[in-house]
Length: 228
Image 1 (tube, one colour):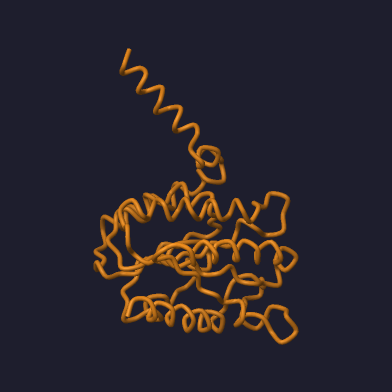
Image 2: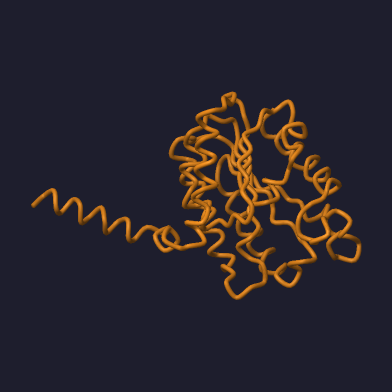
């Protein structure tokens, strides 16, 4: 009887988990293959303990010069295209737990895009808190950096909500030890207050080489400030 009670309690707690409503979503399950590929890399590759792990959506995935741009910091490259915080929160343990790392850098930009399926800024914050909580289970004191969601022409109508999500994560980071918010909008907005399209690919969403140069300078400066 006691064993059954413990099992029922465990099932009840799982059902009440903040992530329970996301775990069964097809859009979350769709990333299982990508996460399994990361797990295969974890088995075949050796990463220095002083590595910085970069995780998140397509802007991380497509950063082909990440290793060179972050030198001398060794990096663990864990980007997958189309990532949302709702799936990163579910898979965070499998992405971060296998590694010893000096810092984590996260960029996820697909939860607020201007569609009817968008999450609220408060929901984005809650999911980011969940990711941080998972990281903290095995990496209690490592610095965690959130790269601000970038202003883009393709998602300009959603910019007010994106700004609010950025602001909530910035405030949360400022109130908690070893959490850092990397501000970037000043470099991607022109004098007219609109996104600088010359920093983006033809889709006006993903960074081009010039855009990555801007990111590299800002992010590397923040890593140096905190880690050195």
